[in-house]
Each structure stands twice: as C-alpha cells, then as structure tokens.
Image (cartoon, rainbow, N blue to C red; front, side, top):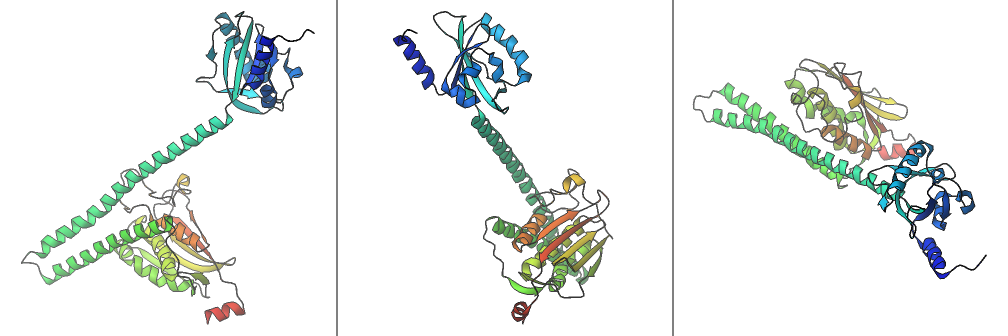
Length: 380
C-alpha cells in the first residue's frame, strides 16, 4: 500500500481530532469510515461498522423513516442539522439508547458520493433541559402559590377588620346598652384572637422553614397538652356548635417534646376539623399508646378529603373545597405547620378519609421515651 499523501494524513488527523463521533457514508448509506470517537460513543470497533448500513447505529423503530429521509437528503445534498426540532436517539452496541444530535455534510470534491455525519451525545444537554423545565415549573408553582397566599391573607384580614370597624361604630352610639356592649366585646375578642393566630402561624412557619425554630424539649406526659389544645381551639368549636369528645389515654404517654409546640399541633388539628365540619358536627380527640408510640387521633364527620388530595393536604396553602368556596377560611398553612412540628419531634402525621362527605382523620405518632431507670430518674 503506497504511503498516504499529506492531504490524506491531514484529513485523517482532523477526523481523529474531531470532538464528535464522525461517520462517513456513501450514497447507499453504507459506512465507509469512522473515527475513534464513534467507537467510544457507540461501543463498536471500526471493523464492526465499516461496510454496514448507518442505520445499525439507531433504534429499529427509526430505521425505515431514516432510510427515506436519507434518500431525500441525497437528492439535495447540502450541510444541515438533522436533529433540530426532533427527538433523535442513537443505539449503543449493548442496546442502550441515548439522545443525539446529527449534522450532515457532503464531502468535496465529489458531492453526492460521500457524506459525513457528525453525531453528538445529547444526554447531558437533555438532562439540563429537563432540569430547567422542572425548575421553571417549580418557579411558576411558587409564583402561583404566592398569589394565592396574598389573596388568602387579604381575605382573612379583611373579614375581621370589617367586623371590628362595625363594632367601633356601634360602640360610638350613645344608645348602646350593656348587653350590646358585652356582645361587642365578645366579637372583638374573637376577631383579634383570629388575627393573632394567623400572625403566630405565619411567624412559626417562617421560623421552621428557615431552621430558626428550636424546641424547648422536656419529658412530658403527652396527655397534659390536650387541655391546652382544646382551650386554644374552643372559640371556633363553640362558634360552630360542634360536639367535641375527648378520650385521653388511661396510662401516661411520656415523650421528649416541647409542650407548647405539641399543644399547637393538636390545636391546629382541632381547628382544621372545626373548619371542615358542618355546624353541629362531631369531633373526637383521642390519645393512646400504640406500638411504642404516643398516638393522637383527631376524627371528624365533616366534608372529608378526596383521595387525590390526601397526599397534598400538608402542602403549603392547600385548602380542600371547590374553587371560590371560602366557607372554611384560613391560609392553608396550619397542616403544613403541623407536619413540620411533628417531624421536629421525630414523629409522623398522616391524613385518612373515605372521600367527600365521609369525614377525615389525622393521626400523629410521637416516639415514646424508653422505659427504665434512666428515664425514671429524668422524669423525677
């Protein structure tokens, strides 16, 4: 074989230096030459490709279409990208598929005789595109939640402020009697308590999300937080004329926790039950020992939760109900705060419901302290 000429050596050097896989084919679509990048990318050696159809490097489902497209290109040979706007895939020797981009050009000096295909692995590019789309969706959802949150805050503050303005007008009347004054004082108490609760929930949630909320742990009997939780939520329960049944455990439920935060957890669950239970409905609160955990259950016979919403009820700003239904009110942060506080205590919370109109149940599990001399010493 005569030694290669300088142009041939230059061409071969350029082919091997190319960053992409380069496959040279003839008019019949048969592989004439490949570079080392092709071998690395597809897993074939040169001898396995030269003399075989180009279609061996693509999934079978694309081969028929590609043959027709190749014929159309050869009828009008000019440099172009074959992958623009298309989902093209290559096929490795081991059967794995991967996304590719292809640029094809006729080789001089005899256009229409040989063609060079530059093939680029687009796996990382597609992954980045997918991540960018996912991030875009996240930002769009965050923006939607922000708008929803601002609307909810405005609505939740407008109602009590309107009521307080009305009370102020009544109190200025010289004809107001003692009974009316007492009713006005009660209205002020309820509305200011409502607004204070909203502000506290917002501050607590911000603290949890920023990692700035710390628990003041101590060994406590979980049963002792029940009266506090009931007291915190009694105004709403009483206003809706609900029947509240409380059934604490007959035995102590010693846990390591923050009494204030645990009472807040139970109170938020009671408040949630009250919001979604029609007037005169029943709410049952129990605390018991189950499988090494202190378990608190809040069950109601209210509106229930659709199955598709059970996994979302603890998401921020999630509210159950038809669009425009503001009967329950709230900002949709109470259950999210419950979940985060329970997790800070090493526990779990779950929601259960048989569907709309079937009521719902929320179950909190907090690990019990181990029994033994060390625990007894700590408790004493």
